[in-house]
Image (cartoon, rainbow, N blue to C red; front, side, top):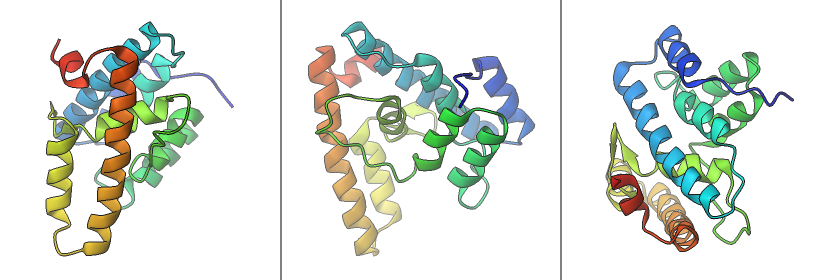
Length: 175
């Protein structure tokens, strides 16, 4: 398995080459910027997150957003390009359940959490972004319950991160 990660420039070229719409590219950039700020803050407090992996996976996590099951198509693209770790994150990003009880915070936690705090190309925080998602599934009680459980886990993860970095994620992102 390769530890090779695509550069920012390579990721942006890939997004263009695969026809990712501009608004999705802007979303990927904002998710990545958010994830890198969180990742750097965690590293400053003793974590050992791979910021190159966060950058690569964040930038191309929605490379195939216009496709059905875009997470599977995107993971296949990343894998075929030799970006195995990015492919793993892309494959699970839509349905990833962070475990706020795990000792370590990993790159997937940071990327998936960031994706759940960015609406379009704006950081809006978890509550606002998840309310938008819940509104999409009104009437589907099973989906609403599943999403609500995920929200609880994400809130617990945010509390863990904020305790570790000594500031709120909102404050960190607004810097």
